[in-house]
Amino acid sequence: MKKIFIGVLLTGILCCIGILFWYTDYQYALPTPVPAGYQSVKTGEHVQLGTLSLPGDGKPVLLHFFNPACPCSRFNIKYFNSLTEKYKGKANMVVVLMNAAKDTPTAVRKRFAIGVPVIYAPELAKRCGVYSTPQAVILAKGNKLYYRGNYNLTRYCTDPKTEFAKQALDNLLNHVEQTEFQPLATRAYGCSLPECTL
Image (cartoon, rainbow, N blue to C red; front, side, top):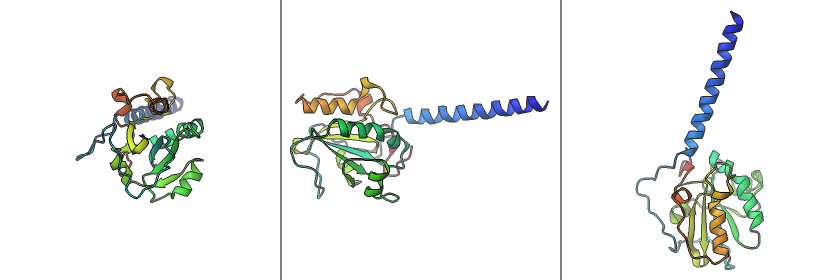
């Protein structure tokens, strides 16, 4: 009888763990709700940077909107770091920290081994039409929005067919006209701003 009880208990625990994993995965698969009063920024529109100074060497700029409190951002950081290596010298990459309450830009740079500038500029999210993390924004010459959206369809950025941000950056570097991406590329997934919760 004791063995049966332990077997049932272990089976119940394993089922609960399985359900928890399924629910968590389901949460990550849902699009981020569009906030009330959201102001979209259209492709080709000039992004107002205010007093923020970005590299002005004529290269494209990829702004990586990141919050270490967001699990989706943490899943994505290894892939982002691989992009910074791949495009070194071809594009400027900047991590835009959305919440500096717990971590300073210097601490985040060190903690996640980020080899590009990390800045605290949450106001930039609204100017770029970003309302979740992680998100990629690619600016062409004159700070014109070329792409705003997801890095990949999968959580760990493992599907080479849906490397949306990489495809957009390659298109810009190869002087391809702005193209429309499928809705899965531009529909926001991840943690809602400003609290960065799922």
